[in-house]
Length: 217
Image (tube, rainbow, N blue to C red):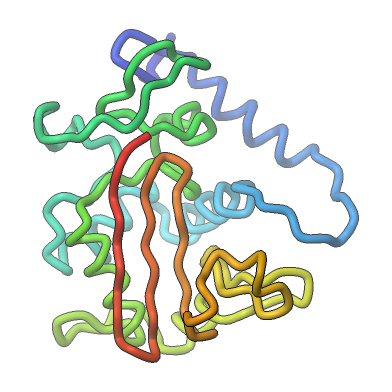
């Protein structure tokens, strides 16, 4: 009755997943202004699963991680690795009242069973860098194409007059340099993202640099 494990000693009903999706479906659209939100990528997961016919984690492992030779990149890492191989994510005093070790920090992802379009992926700095090197190189990695150049361009360039983001990726703020996430010396072509739990990956296409920072909260 409670198949979704969200911490070492806490399990929840699978109805939580349905509740999250129904809440998104029934939510009224607001005015057209920029809001930071995980909702888009939660919905994107469902679209990807509908089109591929398989769960997101299986699809990514089959089409990207295994062919790329990534051996430490996975959702639900306790299925694949010993606990001692995994760095604890965060001390959660708010909800789960424990140190999260092998479980995703983000509550929305946790309540969907640890696999979500917005969070839940565990990896190493080296393998996160490999994924971003593939994007930097226009979708190719070790001589094999994974994404089209057009797809990489769409995701890593400004898409809206209402924000300074690509699709998911953060970009330098041209209109308000003082409020930008990047220093003034960062080229406008740069793209990246930082995670609430303590992770970050940024790419500088002008200088062919991939920078990854991994810590915990």
